Image (cartoon, rainbow, N blue to C red; front, top):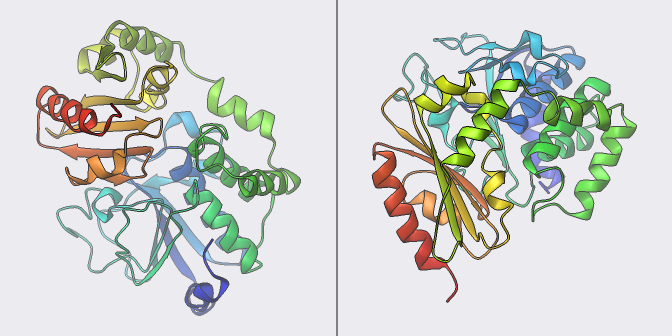
Length: 327
């Protein structure tokens, strides 16, 4: 938990300014969207003029979130009269193409960086990072309540989704008693756990299930079924009709196998890079592995992007994971 005294610079910044832009990482997940929207709505409740944006815009999968209809694509140039707040983004380059080449079209660093990734180097003027928290949305709950900012039903719903999705529906290792206490407070503030779970997990298109079928046909195992992986291809998307956002959560099918200690997915991206997402049951530190490729995250969940081909990256990941597996 971030010490209350560390929040004074943020409160001063908010008191002295009116216009803000809240952004998060590319390929946003539930925590990225929930944190962006939750913070933006809290600042608006304080009377601030807030623009919320993402390099990928709004995924239709998260259109059920309160306030999501106002989230736009990331601007190519930072409005000079707005302060920039980054949430749930461990690597500044992942804020988007406008910032990643580097700072092309942007004339300064983010003013505030709020995150929960241990690999976050603290790239902003004000850095509020709690690596013990299971989600950035939980960090934001601590900030909002400590500073006595408004917490209405819409803000609570967004923060709840951020926490629920980044904890795997409260299943992952960093989920603590306090996480459940916070979830209960968000429900008391108006977040509806049934409706929000329905929006996250029971509102998929048929195309997503067809993509699951494609993935299940291409799963690989090695090291006595302790390592599992699959590769997402453009052909899989074409055959299923799914969109890239609908690959979110597919890696959980691998982690559901009892013998699997570590799993990963690979995907060749349109920009020529290969994306990898890794999960560990505990024996393997995937954050350490991803850092070797310029990525990051947490010990049990991390990701990376590299110029290596999916085949070459997969070979190297298997080697590095194998080195950490218990005998």
